[in-house]
Image (cartoon, rainbow, N blue to C red; front, side):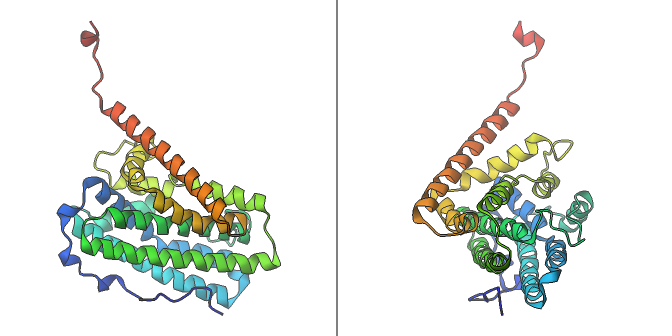
Amino acid sequence: MSFLKPAARPWRATDFTYSRVAPAAFDAELLHVLRTTALVESRADQYGDYLRAVFAARGAHWRDAIDQWNREEREHGRALRRLAEAAGGGFAFERVMHAYLDGVAYHACDGRSVRGSIACELVARCIVEALASTFYRVLRDCCRDETGRTVLHALALDEARHCGMFKALLDAECAQRPVSLRQRLRVGLGRMLELSDDQIMFAAWLVDTAAEPHYRSSAVARRYQAALYPRYRYVHLCFAARLICPVLFGRRSVAVDRLFATALWLGLRLRATLSRAALALARRPRRTQWQHR
């Protein structure tokens, strides 16, 4: 039994021609997002170790699925690293990656899910993969470099398959141990609100040359959100809703998908506007006592 569908066109990070990348095609904000993501994705082995421990009691088929997922996620990190290095000089990946791994610990591999149960862990994983596939579509659509678009498109397709894998695991788990709608919504919506968690914000802080003294500063999140959220279009949120709604509500509904996509769109627009306004306010020179007079 295979939970993970094979890729239509399997690939490795070495398959892309990074020498053709045109640095001028990457604006500073996109480069910042790419570097941040390269760090987060390069932690794939820790994610895999954690999930193998959580799912250990479910047997070989589950372990095989996580192993293959882990191998593909590892290639994602390698491809993003190569793309980020080709898109802009001065990215000392190895040094920054060491600081990243040392700075923020991942979940303990003690077999316990931080979500409370295997089913809730799978709900959270579905949300992560759905948002990741949407995220790479957003970056692909705003990237003006052909090689960059190709890499990001490949990542988006992989993450959609990974969402399907975790949804298949969730369905198998719920067939034996059902999870309530309330639990799905609590875990799923809660995971969506963790988009600015420590894993991402610490990475964003490390690659930000104008960073605050500490990565938990709200300015770090505002800069990252202002660089990313305005790039989303309504069509991207419609895609995300089609993946997320069956996980949250346990069934498919075109009407629910549209309502959910609209809610996502409005939420992102609001957060993008607030982040940009806060950054603009922070950049304004403060008046001195002499100027007030």
